[in-house]
Length: 85
Image 1 (cartoon, rainbow, N blue to C red):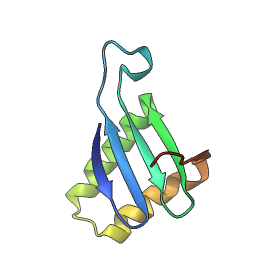
Image 2 (cartoon, rainbow, N blue to C red; image 1 turned 180 degrees about the vertical axis):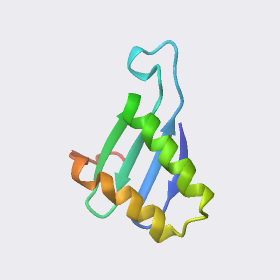
Image 3 (cartoon, rainbow, N blue to C red; image 1 turned 90 degrees about the vertical axis):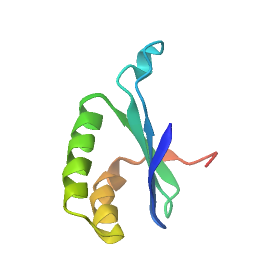
Image 4 (spheres, helix red, strand yellow; image 1 turned 60 degrees about the horizontal axis):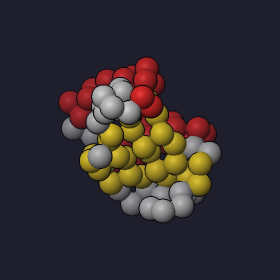
């Protein structure tokens, strides 16, 4: 796993594909909202779309506010409380 984004509001960790782990064959992303102390893990098609959007966003040289705004789209899906972060 590798932290790919960290701001005062959000943290994103990328998990690479793991061939020997059925649930992680395609890898995924953990997105943490530090303010609400909630997180979501995305994988599969949603993770692929997330990766595409992040790559496009990076090409635009976004500010932290731009990236946080993009990640804010996932707030409604963050139902898991952060326990060990």
